[in-house]
Image (cartoon, rainbow, N blue to C red; front, side, top):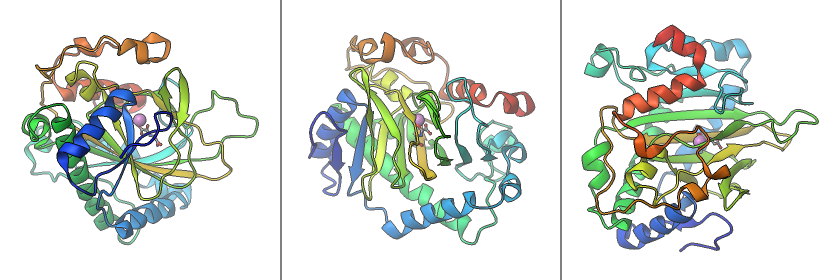
Length: 331
Ligand code: OGA
Ligand code: NI
């Protein structure tokens, strides 16, 4: 089921055999914190439509894209940002993107109370965009929930462990990025997205055929090249914290060294905002986690073992660092 240890594992989940898949997920999450899945059952036509609409969106004139700029998204934190608009690792990323999430109307209690990151999406005026995007988010979220049940089983926990505690009403963020080619003569410091880890439980990403995603593994960057009809999945900070370091929230970054634009579409399946994360009792802290990091420490200097409060606080703190201007305006 899994291939060699030098490239990322590819896990076929078509069997839906949770014990078998759970074992493969456990190995992949311990060793890499990253893996591909195939056999996920998402309609290829839906994925392809989403990718085509993403391309159509970015191909528009800048002023059309700016019609849904993040400044119009308010506290829901949705919409478009141009190249250099996000500072993942403290410096501007060479990417443009659009942020979406669970579509919540004004009557939702969380929206009424002004909870940041909750609310309505800003949809581009492209035919079919809204319906395709909402269907796609639902499908990928369902696959993410399936993976979390496999991960639970792989850890020796009941299948619904994460669902019952954290993801019955998950925080779902969906992002579409366009990475322009590197500028002429660019060095290794010019990154599409600066090195970072993801904040939540699990990320599921569809990428086009260009490539450029790199994962920190055993003291070097290894590529996560395109694999047809797959998702690249990775462990986020909260899953590392819950597993007390058994699973690594691996450092990753993007360098588009091709001559074409690169599209990627990550979906972040995260705990509900008010979840308080408690390390899983049956797992002893894994003290090798620090040794698996670049320079032996986390990229942001944080210590996940001391994270307190709920997931919403953790996420808002992170997000406001990467969009400092927006923080001043809406938070
Ligand atoms: C991210 C991320 C990688 C990619 O959005 O967190 O790591 O390939 N994206 O776009
Ligand atoms: Ni990431």
